[in-house]
View 1 (cartoon, rainbow, N blue to C red):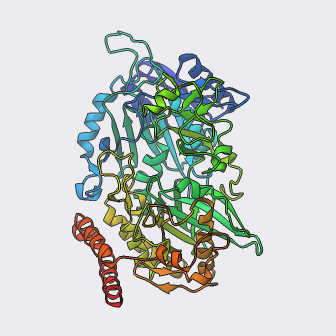
View 2 (view 1 turned 180 degrees about the horizontal axis):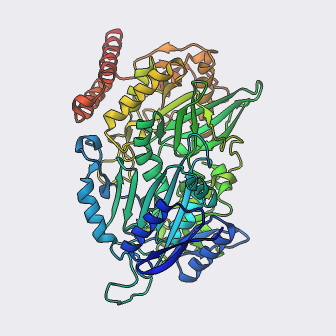
View 3 (view 1 turned 90 degrees about the vertical axis):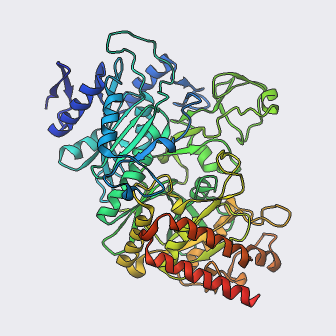
Length: 623
């Protein structure tokens, strides 16, 4: 079969034989607008990766790391203005503002399309437009979805090869008529203007003006101005959560900001699968790659960030990791905190905004290696211990590693099972120094949704808009990622619970971050969180009972594996102690938070709030 031809700006261009007419028409339309000098259709091959990364090294966008220490690894440095997701410039563009809800930035779709048309006019002059066919999830799986991203960024192109199943297999499914999500991206830094005036390229092109836009009614994604992370790798948060959450609501499945792990009881061989949603800085990746400190269990990683869940033929909720890679925060990652992540990124990895050592390796704050006498920092400047003493960071706090999930030493053998893995329990948690017990089980399904809806986490010192230590609501850890009204999203969870009935997993609230009166963590965390999972899966198996508490049902002291820990009954009771007055104040705050959603808040959620208040009153009376 010969390649197909089409015309862009009066010039003939080629496309793979598998490209459908509607796909070619869309590519042609966007190319006529953005006016790239050339169009390249990605096939996902090793040869393609080598060619593009070699070109990036030549242009200065990539620095090749020491091949003996980090084979096939590269370092990229972005601009200080382009280092993270830009929530203030992220829009949900649906017909009715109420459908976006009060926690999203809404824009009228017609007005936004007109604005985007202006900024994309000529945005790719002097550049190559890469056409990236990709699958989110195993190619052809019943839970997976397809997409095409158009981008003028080689950084995005090679990153999408790691983060998605990119290339010929995805394009073949599209050629067979499978639906796909169109995603358009430009860094907004053309190398030639309409008059023919040229400018030199830069190692990190981007634009001060940024738009990250989502059109849920037509499943479109359009992003302009940023080359970084979730702003530009449009398969990630844009597709996998914001657009997918709206698709899931329509089509009776769930797109969640959750890790997935398998816990195997070695004595019986019985497998349990747990998903968990935590706000940032709450140990999500560490839990996904947990190394148990108690004997008898093996943990394997299915996914570290996103879970797509759909009812299976047997009525159980089954989950896949739609991503093919890990896009992890580097600072704080070490062999102490997450040895599996450290081993995963030893090869075939893109590091962004970390520091460079003199021998061609990477370094960041919190890594195992001590601070060297000399580094090149994330902005390309010399860095010494004197800079550290002055409070400067060698690596940006949001610096990242982009690495293939398949390289994880404990990747689950079924992580690419098309039908997914059956979910036994769902966890919600946050960073809470007081008043939230170590673990609590839902009373009833609606209470589980209430737990997710009312999650609040203490703001870390990294936040600039809220006082550190204060609480920030982040329902289901989905606040920046839900593509529609959050109250309707809670309603969708309730609907899914009703559909699956007893087969819907039980929900638990966990808190690894409780502190004592001296400000010391009471729970050791990290690998010892396996003790909490041990109790949860034994509960799921009906092997242990629980006792009633204010926030949920708690473990009995004698049923919990505390062997080897310095935790007696007195300390245990402190881990589960609650202050009724503090909880009363928090429920007042939760009610105020819910009020912004008006009458869209499901009645079942308001009923759970009332039941929580009743339990608080009973606890106060018993005290």
